[in-house]
Image 1: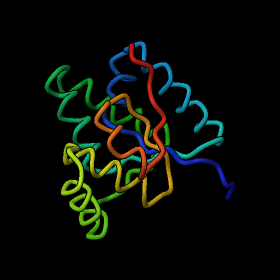
Image 2: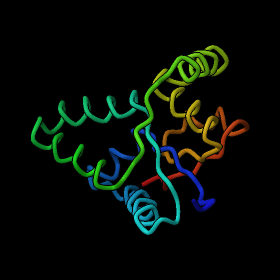
Image 3: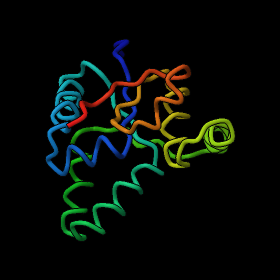
Image 4: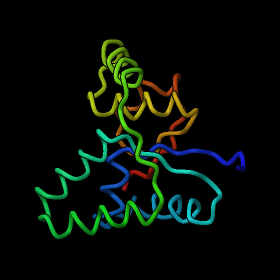
Length: 138
């Protein structure tokens, strides 16, 4: 297997992409790189759940099924939360004013030595711990 970079997707990034926001263009570019096997993508199950509930709430179950199908089609690795990841996320939550779901993104990025793809400014607090691939600000 190649030594390609790994990106952990935050729900912020995936929602920007699926909602057709201008900053979603960068997410599309990263997904295309992944499809060309130039990088790998990962998403924690907690953050998958976040994408699902927000999509259901805003667009309904049919759109949500399409989003889930696309995530699978894009080959995004869905990483289950195990004890170690949960404890790492909990420790990050204690130390930083970061949303709990965002702590799983950061914990997974640390585990995989990956960069987080997001536009959520809360991640500025943990830039000393993880690399962040920032989406444009609209």
